[in-house]
Image 1 (cartoon, rainbow, N blue to C red):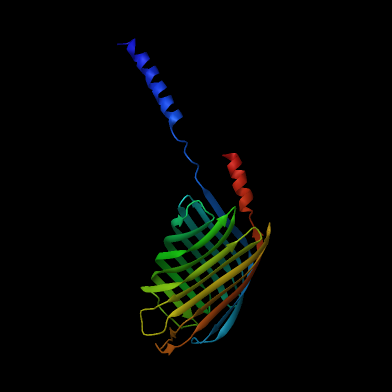
Image 2 (tube, rainbow, N blue to C red):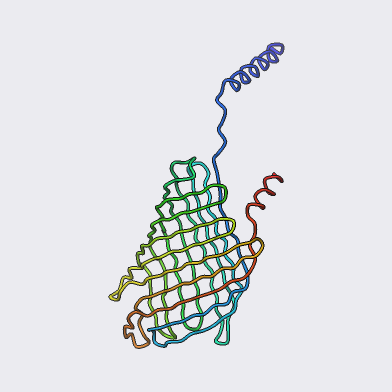
Length: 276
């Protein structure tokens, strides 16, 4: 029996090698990514109209944003994070936000594809004159994407459910967005020299006033390591004043300009690949 054991092992190894030789080779995963990573000094202006008070406020802050898209075979992901912290003569201004989603992309191996994603988004931003916050779960996207060698274009319809939210304009103008559905659209364009993002949402607030509209857009010109970005955010919707009186069409507008640095994500990927 002891003599038969080595012979059996030799036969087993031979059969395994023969099977591996006949097996079909495993195709490598098809994947691609597009990223932008920017931070710098930001100067901004807030203008509010139609709330319990009208006014404007200037500010200086440190701000940054990281956005990334990617796919591997039929799986696709998107993530966006941002922050701003600073202030001006009228007080502190700042905020933070993040959005993450994943789903399916078909056809899987093509730069051009339709996609569906599901995820979550949370954000808050404010100063003395305006405040906005959301926690949306789930958030759903369905649209078209072109992604190849770090260049991205996508456009999608989106919708979801706001678990929590606020739309405050002026010193005491308030609107609670909790438990409200939203619908809208988003778009993005990313190249080595340009990063543009935009989104629109209409929140169908579950009270007797009109919906709240949210629009935001940013455009960045990049010559690594320098980046210059302009951004705008407009929120429009009825609010309730300090005596619960309805203040129709209250609007807050945030306009900003950021000058800072941009990381070369393509170069980072090449360095990491060489290390691995």
